[in-house]
Length: 110
Image 1 (cartoon, one colour):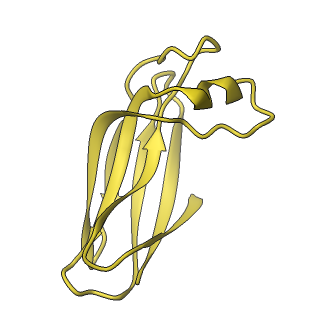
Image 2: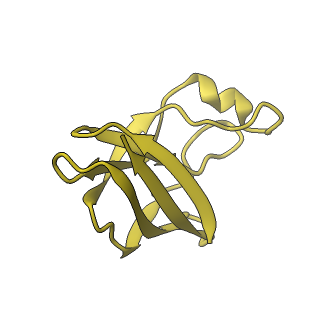
Image 3: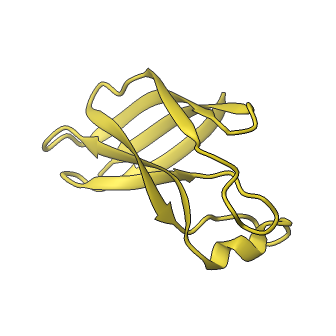
């Protein structure tokens, strides 16, 4: 499991992840798919296909792709109304090349 920690404001839906898989020319390799393995206890998770800016590290061969929007899978978390505290869930992200990542998502709702 890969740890993934984010902070979300109370009573707001917030995009907390964006997943894409790009070729060196910044074109999309194909769709990224997510499977909710274990849902949150104090909120909900939504996945949507959208265009956004990727966030490759400066040393990455794909860092130039950060300058333009590309299609990918956005993960949005929304806490239960007036809930403040911690929540967690697990997600399986499947990339077009067949690679996959399990994310152990922890959310602090404040």
